[in-house]
Image (cartoon, rainbow over all chains, first blue to last red; front, side, top):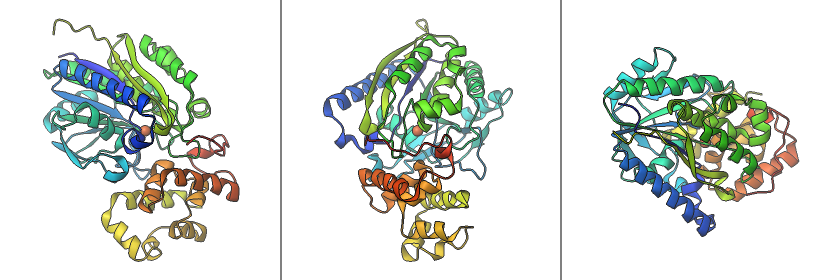
Length: 277
Length: 107
Ligand SMILES: [Fe+2]
């Protein structure tokens, strides 16, 4: 069954962990956009959600860093961070080991991915799930792209992963959603935390909505670092969703800088044109 | 300079309640199994958040170490800025990519 939902959202830990420090007006507007995204996800009838994130040294470290990893377990515990710090209680999210196995087997035809039968979810997935499946009752399949420890996954390989995810999703009968989480420009957890390049973000999201492969791949890490910070490396997760959406056009539902959350808080989705499903 | 092992210790500390308990009881001896310089050991024992940042520890690892030590968010950011003032630009790792030193004014 083709994908029933494809979108992206922010995952910064401050979104939940520092909510008391944010301007209530803009914060609540962002939370409302997350509520709308949850409603769209539920309306899609998705049976499982694939979350492509850039995890932050929670499971994967430079002793054995995969370019790509996909979860293959029946449950995922989280958050790995201190619950008080992140503002999210400990949870166990359901997975689907058997479905992961089928998807990974197909993806491996074109992309070498690591698989993980154990995966502690960090804020990269826990923050989106907190809003999108607040009862943690929708099976999730975590996917990681190395956006943290250079040498990073090349952008065009992230695109190839997205294509492989789509091909694999199309080959199974389940109704699947795919959500990318991460940047855009930000300098998280550094002295520059709170700095946001709004123009860069808007330009990137324009490319994302047009699903313009050439424009989306026309970045290099040094320039991204200079213009969008190391958090900008996380555009890989957004690119993978673009590729999975197969040329669909996108809409930005929310994209506003919230400095205490350290990022332009973003919610966007692709129109998959699935009215008949 | 052994940034890899500094970060590996912090990565493992962030994941392990047992290692956290051992660190609390004896900060220095838990570092025995890691290949570290005296400067790195001192920064991890103090802890000196600013020096760890300058040594190149990734903020995605360092911020949890700061939270573990009950260092409030804005204090954590300021300690990194103070570290740059005291020790100079980041020496290694992803933040040394373009020589930027981190002088942001935002919080
Ligand atoms: Fe992130």
